Image (tube, rainbow, N blue to C red; front, side):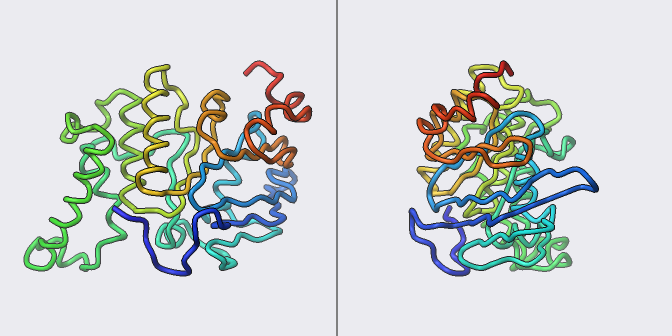
Length: 267
């Protein structure tokens, strides 16, 4: 499985996505204020900060769920106007959520298959018939889904309804559904939240494997600083919607503003 190649090519290490002076408010509440940073192709980019720092709001801006009042987002060198999440998905951006957002009554296989929908070219009528070209297309996409299931080591639960799965496996299925979209940029919103130590170790391994095996660029929000420091190439830190630091993990963890706002506070 490879990332999509539509649109301008971006070489590894070049800027894939640029956030420029973005501000977002809800009424009188400022969620993000004049924030700028970039994400380079092939890296794992962490976005950290205390609760209420504006991290999820920033992800929502990147994938088109929120539209900032000021600033702009550039993806693969193209500055975006207002865009909806499905347009972001078609452009090569996928995400997971803080709270698992799966179809609980469907199997793990069918949930991951749902991520292939935007890759299907036959119309709804043909898909209902499951005949001829539509059937051939479905077989091809199911083959891709089975590859993801094997990659994530969830063969044993492929036919199990996700509502019956432990939380850690649900998060893995959600990751699989995002991978089924073949994203160039994968947004992970607290992928380790609610997990025990063993589940965190497994998810950390899969995040690294996604980055290394598929070459997928990853931006993640995470509160576990051990995970952030181990996985990330660069880290941007927000506090009350304002960027207070940006750099390598070593640079960030030694920054006094970060220590005062976040690292020095029990959480």
